[in-house]
Image (cartoon, rainbow, N blue to C red; front, top):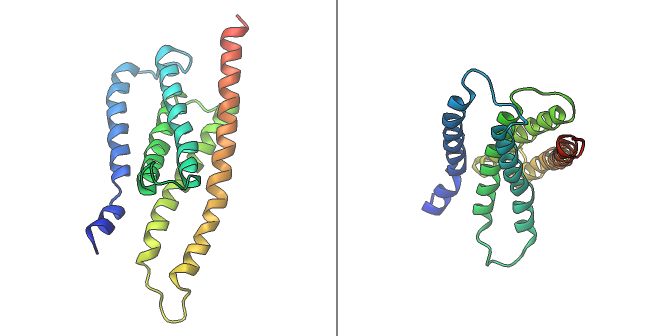
Amino acid sequence: MTNATAAARRPVELWAALGAIALVTAVYVPVARGAPPAPSGLAGHALGIAGFLLMLFAETGYTWRKNVRREGYGPMRRWLQAHVFTGLVGPYLILLHSAFEFRGLAGIAALLAAVVVASGLVGRFAFTAVPKVIAAPGAAPAGGARRVLSFWYLLHVPVAAAMFVLAIFHVIAAVYYATLLR
């Protein structure tokens, strides 16, 4: 295995995401002091906005880069790493923003976020594990396994899109009810 191949298989983005989550948690716990901050308070809004922006990047940045054929924007591997990082940290911030209450539209969006994160982790590890699989006699070759794994895409992408639509509706409703109805 070459150094480039070994580096591609190390989940640095997962370790970075865990480090960021630990750092956010270290700041959040003293702020919470026995009760989570209200989602509509300053800390809650800051968490919600930061989480939404990270999820916006996770949703659009990697997809945009996959569709751009020029090389001047960096290697796809780095974009995938950024996608995984923001796709883990963003939903965690949203979880903290929710104050662990899952009701209504925001609750459904949070449930979809959990499905997207879980399916993303499965996809991250499944797609990197497939090249390691050596086909047994009579088994499908690795290319056949990649085609089967492509069905994972049919869960991850539409659920992510639905989550994002619900999140946008949540933001619009929150702004409407919090500011325009005063």
